[in-house]
Image 1 (cartoon, rainbow, N blue to C red):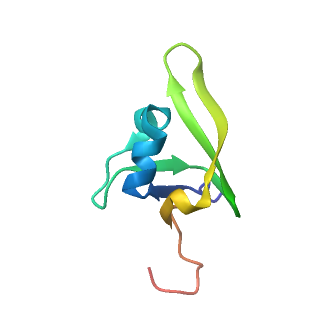
Image 2: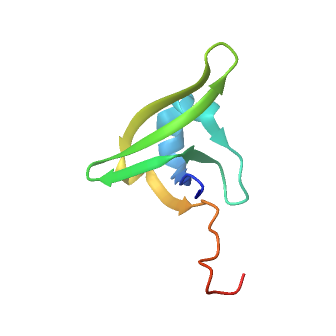
Amino acid sequence: MADAPAYAVMFHEGALKELGEAVRPYLKPGELGPYLLAKRIEPAMPFTLLVVEIATAEHGTLEFEVQVPSTFIKLILNISKHRPLGFTKS
C-alpha cells in the first residue's frame, strides 16, 4: 500500500506575519524555514485549499480545510515517501 501524499507548504515572510497566530501553532520547523504539513492541496487562483491534520489531546486527530491566498505561498514540496517501481535501482 502506498504512503499517503504529504506536502510541505512554505509561506512568504509577509504572509506569515499576516496569518499570525491562525497558522503559527501548526507550523513545523524545517531547514529552509517553517512549513505547514498538508495531506492534500488544491491550488486554484486566487486561493489554495490545504487539507491539514492536527493531533489534539482532547479530540484525537482532527482534519480541517484552510484556504489561503495563493500569493502567500512561496513553495510547495511533495514530501511523500516514494518507493522504487520494481524495475529501477533503489
